[in-house]
Image (cartoon, rainbow over all chains, first blue to last red; front, side):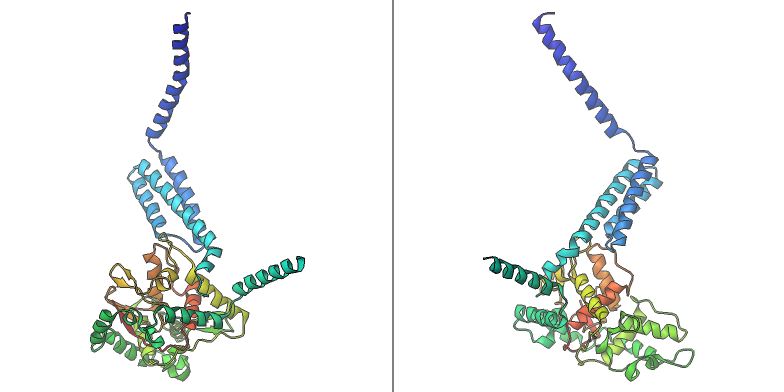
Length: 112
Length: 277
């Protein structure tokens, strides 16, 4: 093998796994969510929102996102259902963060 | 050098402790001073008129509206309801001091037996239940009518909320204060965001009311609601508007909040029932 052939082989051997990775990633993004994915995402969101409720600080938008997830799942649109459930979980986490940080931060607003 | 450092540390610790120890008298004084300083042209007793105390145009419209006030039907209904005996022959008058007339300014109060704050709305429903009647919705028209009548009989009487020498009462007051200043909801607003930091400013079409004297005008007829609203309705609606899930009406948090807000408005006259845009 001459030098040019060697370089071409090297390029291909480096590029090949990269192509495989890109294809794998694309496939996983495009893969349709299943009912099981929805159930997992929904359970996580619901549990997080329940924790926000324990802190007396749930948000209306979390409840709306959860309702949207259920509605999409009823129509077997599991991509949307999973996306909404994940949004609900993120919102619930934000409400927990708010409740936790406000335990002390409220004093900054107090009229003294 | 070491003793100076120690003195500084002790001063810092004691000032931190002072900040964390509730002092309702100092709070009320600072609260009033804040609003009086912010609005030097408003007479203290005028704060009970909410946005009308801060905006001349709105005030003129309100004064004209007061000739045929929109809460009048509710007030009449409340008067009739208050006088009508329960099925057992007793009435609301039997549940309250002074037959329930001219007592609004004393609510909420701290009940030592129960160890909790009792609001007027809560006391009215307890009166009903004690006499075999079903409770009213805390956010409904019946409760608004009854409290409208009771407020009307107290018009002009200054808020006289007491914090007894009981650590539980002080804790309830402090909880109410914490609730008032705590940010909540997706909009990250506290009660103070609107009613301390921005009274007089517009929020969409509304002019925000100052927190000082804000409960003196309750219950209120709101054009936005097209009807009357109790304190419970106002508090739960505030929570939803900032995209927070409201607590159940008359939850401990709301009762404590009412205790705090009423206390810091001590001395200002009851002006309810009121009307707001």
